[in-house]
Length: 463
Image 1 (cartoon, rainbow, N blue to C red):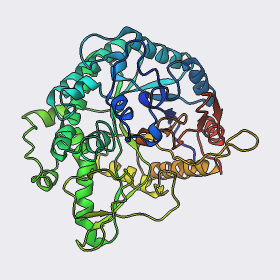
Image 2 (cartoon, rainbow, N blue to C red; image 1 turned 135 degrees about the vertical axis):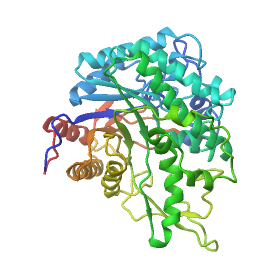
Image 3 (cartoon, rainbow, N blue to C red; image 1 turned 30 degrees about the vertical axis):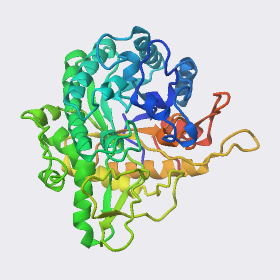
Image 4 (tube, rainbow, N blue to C red; image 1 turned 60 degrees about the vertical axis):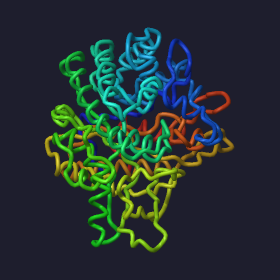
């Protein structure tokens, strides 16, 4: 197997609400996910992120775990309500101190900190004021970015503004399966725009406060959309516009795709887009973060048969696919992960090559890729997760193939470092390469962690 590029960045990733716990300690304010998880019936088994993996109290243990893995980088997210409880105003010093210790602990172990500003935990006070559908939230996000740049910018060299704004906008405000559980398609499109705008304003704020050589990025869960047949080209176009070009357009090209605006004209007139907004959203980036789990298969609905909605994003009271009522999301052949997502690494290669063709001057890095499996504990007390090792091997091979095809891929972050709170699924789905015992919080390396450590050390896949 061909080795990865010499300076390829190997890492792993987590998100604040999924691992930290300490939900009401040291001045942290409530987030929309606290509200969501505490609302009966919204999260499987009534699980919450109150304790999660107790990462807040087990920081040194987890830093040592990262050091033992040998990764060159760790992607974490900052909890906005932990450092700025109401989403505006002064910094909460105890909350900021936690991230100071995290960053310093990573650097002491020669691990590069990769900080994500927003991984879905909007301060509840901002949601009470209207949330992402309101323009002011973008301004508050930029101020928060400035504060973090001032506090951590001398040590953090890679910043990610948003994680998967697709989920924030569509799952949070259209289908309601994520916080804040709203089902308002027009508000979802307004949220989409203010996330794009907030991204651009945050990059500007970071450029003015962080180190001059800091790299700026955003993480998108781009959907690799395929049609069942050639007759489904328009279905592919509609899904691609909503899932991908709604973000790539303003962020990388400075304009929303005209077909997206036409497709959604019956939902909104897009009057929330003001003069200069698209230019503000389009700030120079150093690398584009890509999250990939599986491809998406669509076809034109015939209007008569039962319509398939197997998009992998949970069934909610409404669809996240605004103005795509005539598009079917087709269940794909297995094998499947525990999330019900099909395993198809070819989509990752094709997606990376598409990005290279469309944006040849924009390097990429895989900021999330991984899989949930049952992960039973064997009689020897260990987790022999051969299915996850196979999944990771397949997808790293796909990355390698894309690089060989000309894609400029700079790094790979496995999702996730440890089993954690998987949003509306609670703790029922295990994505970690390290097992977390829910009763004791004990961390146990799965076979996949040992395998990944060896891949990182060799900078290539085993035969």
